[in-house]
Length: 297
Image (cartoon, rainbow, N blue to C red; front, side):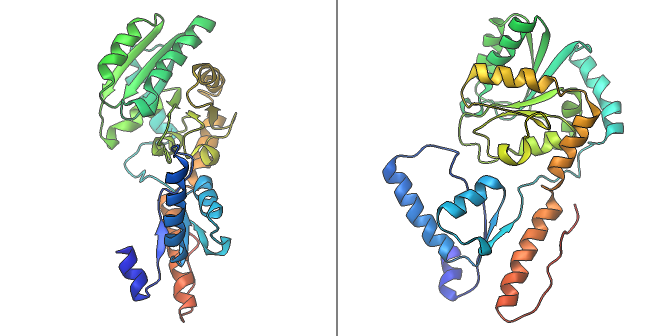
């Protein structure tokens, strides 16, 4: 469809999970990728970048800045119960289900239980925290996948860390988990072009600890403000980031900062970026149109 539109002379707007960090490539593969993507982008009238790393990708391939428009990566949060009154209503109930008293630090992992997501790292890092501080940590795995049984067995070797497997939950049930937790962890090893679960967590006021391999880290995770960033693949770095992250937990001002950080990455702002790109191209084709600043949401 892209090439057909290009051959017919119709303007192209391109928006995708563009990034260079998500996986390592050999020199030949990287050269071929660069050549093909450069040819594609040259045919596009506007390139819509979803975040910092997306824009850096376009710039690295020589795309002019005047053809770029910000259209952030986002989630539809209409089904969430993400306010402070919602937190009050949901937090105590689900922590009771987890048998997690106030002195228990609850760290939430939300995603598929696969190798690339760094599930084992989360468990090992939580164990280090317990060994250093003699505190109590509950690691909640929200999601399912092939590593579930291995993680259950691995947890037996980490005394002091309790593990709760919540399985897959539909989106309407997620708010209770985000409100019940003290911290979200996403220690992805590779192929995490963005990490929408961070958007979801921050919208509930939940600070996040992510690896520097997570695509949204430069945009959404600000150290000491909305969470912490750890070195990819390092248990020690992740453990230290979790320790710092837990210092942010349960603080109203931190929850407010989390919600403010992610507010720009809304459906309305993403739609406004698409509209801006469209009207810019339509105007250059002979029509004068004013693009909306935001479309709500």
